[in-house]
Image (cartoon, rainbow, N blue to C red; front, side, top):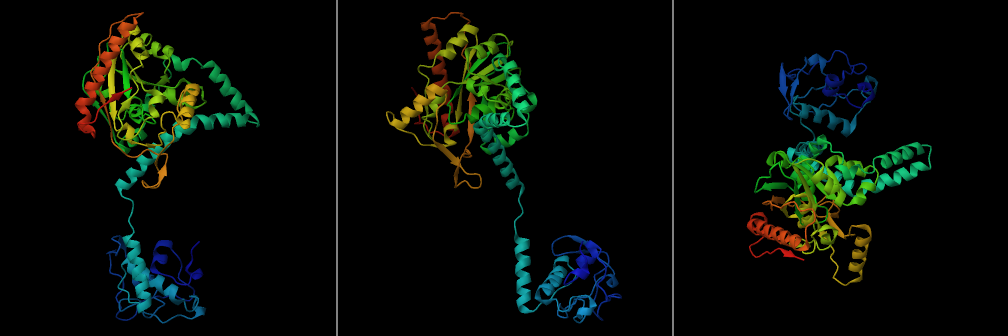
Length: 459
């Protein structure tokens, strides 16, 4: 509890704001003759605050005789008066600085003290407060941070935590969750468990604005059909595909009314505790024939299943300015489309490859061979990449750089329903899809950061 008797100096601010009693022996306060007190009503302080004034007899006089011609003049009180006897430079500075800040008169300090106070006040008033733009930037950065940490660490950390709990008195938690996973094992391949509220989560708007991410529509998609959307390129973390097809922040549902978007990812992700719930709630499903077939045949019409065709192999060649896709021998999605009569829709995310910097190893090198073997065994490639740090764009970290991403959804390729398509039929529609993708790329590349000479290479 603040009490003026416990301080070296008592200022008007103490009496007014804290209700402190007058120091011992200091009753009957009044201003010096000819020294005006605070004006009645409201005083505008030097900080721009409206401060109510008080009668002069409520304000303690200055214990310092040199506080200026407009100060409250009293001789330095003795120690028995309760002021501690000789407050010194610190107390003098505090008292006079308070009068200056609160607008209770002009202060006049000795040269050294006056310069110190002026410097301190100038520093205080010049200190920048966070602007709305700064706050938005931090919210955007934190939204991207939570997303990156969720995808990189949530599954592994949850698994390790449940294993740890087995050896503690909380082992029933692990046992119950294991029972739940066994009971819920097939749910990811049967449409998952979407939570519309997660798509509308406000944090995704900050996530979108960080890059920013934009969705461009070129043709309508009828709700009376199902679709397979080919998403290109893979990049490192498929930011464009996630933001457009899983979150509602870019307006997919408004652009394509009646269409329910899904995004496929590695089936192994749905074996990780807690992480599987996070993925399903957003509308992700395993990239398996069973899961895709369920959405295209047993979930009605108006379903759009987005597949990142290049997969993990394409991520190994991801570099800024490189537009190379692994697509020439990827024909399984075309066969699935024919078997279910789903239209093929190409999409391209311009800027996806610019979000990270990757150490790309030469073909035939031992590091490249390790990456490829790991990819075949685990289903994903261990990329050596880096982005920006948390506190500075100049530092290195695992957050993506803020580069604009524009996802353009192209014209649907109409596909008939053929339960057992021949290889020739699959090849024909695959070629039609590639031509549609090349057309989409060439018509939009100069609009979204590429030059006329840039070409799309398909391997």
